[in-house]
Length: 79
Image 1 (cartoon, helix red, strand yellow):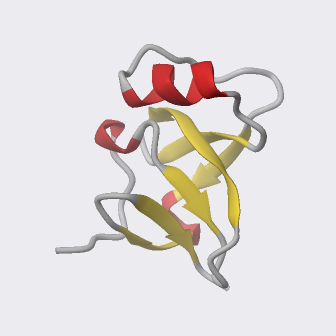
Image 2: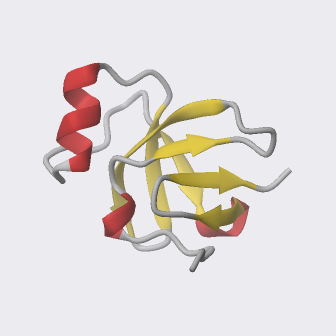
């Protein structure tokens, strides 16, 4: 079942906009805020999926109120 809240379990998931274009990968979750790396390398993507990554200065904040749905593979944003 899909949901709209972001949790620590979502670290490593790709983030897509309303039309399905990938805009980054979640590197860290703190409360209702996810930190998204817009240009992750392979090592950072794997680290995020394993929960070993932290937000960097180039990551942007994503708040739960901008999320349309969270699936087991991705976080899709509202329009």
